[in-house]
Image (cartoon, rainbow, N blue to C red; front, top):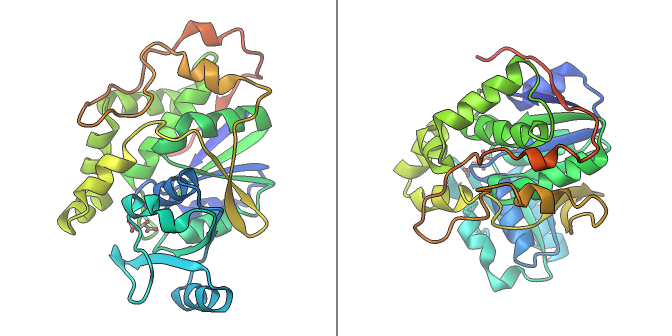
Length: 287
Ligand code: MLT
């Protein structure tokens, strides 16, 4: 297994990689919103890059519509892009169209891979399990903010790759750098709050969204692209990796209200017997 982190959508697109597995991250807030919607019974989430297209799909197919520009809910839409809105009973069994500034376009780009997964801290271990089950080369794509590096997405990419590489020997500079970032921010909420986009959201009054998005493994959902939409699939019953990942000492299983958790956990030697090919985190230049 070979894992490579792309710091922005453009970097991924320019690379021309043909990695069969692509994991898209826009933790603040698109991928967290999508995962929350699926965890609360939404049947499918259709990501759309452009506002008029989202509006048209909503009208033509009588789908619910969510989205933002500059962090703010779009006029006439049912929902903005706050993951806390995505718990609405209105979403149960329904299709939701969503358009956001960066995240939805990144999902569209990643959807060309054989397997495209939508990741956030909320479904971190479930995503890791799906990646391990798929094997092969993996592109972890950070949405970034307006084409630039974004600490919030990079933090999740580091958490995911560290979780993957923790099965075996940590390898290479990039894997060590990922561990360094996690040690710098033992609480994910601190990383989200320190990021430029996190600060902007706090200024806009969405500080509680950061608390929501920082809950590691709150939802056991694998969110994957399937013919034009993101849908939830249950964890693979074969690998049992999620069970193993969750049995790691101190593993974060979701933040109890108001309780701060420590992340990353101490990585567990018990994972060593799992027979996966050694993951290698490809080197890249940190900005
Ligand atoms: C994005 O796609 O750029 C973000 O999800 C923006 C936001 O936080 O609403």
